[in-house]
Length: 169
Image 1: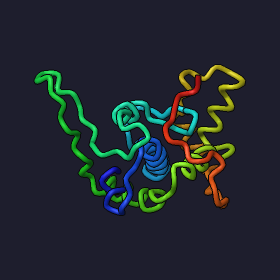
Image 2 (image 1 turned 90 degrees about the vertical axis):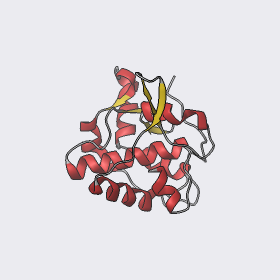
Image 3 (image 1 turned 120 degrees about the horizontal axis):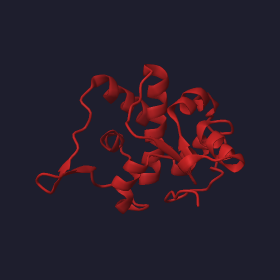
């Protein structure tokens, strides 16, 4: 996703990457009936966040990400690059998501992810009235509620332009 964004002349912050990763995962779930990424998303202040991916790029802070994620080789004790996907279907899907959403500002992406009735809103609202363990956004909720996302037509995003996401306290 980072490579594809750079290909179209955009460098992503961690906040923007989180939203694009969420949109890509959700649409892949709906279209292919299987998850794009392993793990899960949580409802954080500025929308859905994949905690593992967030941690991988946390050191970039609010700046555009200039490096790629790495994994720890426990045998060698070294960090090794994670290979990009090789599945043409996944590459094409990521390209489509980046083409559709990649030029939007983080504030616009947050607005879309906060749509009334959409997965993030559903989990946050549920958390106000009942116990929501870790504010996780289950894949079945994403599949059922993703249709509620709408693109704002306002000139300025309602959330402003946030620079970095944080979990709900």
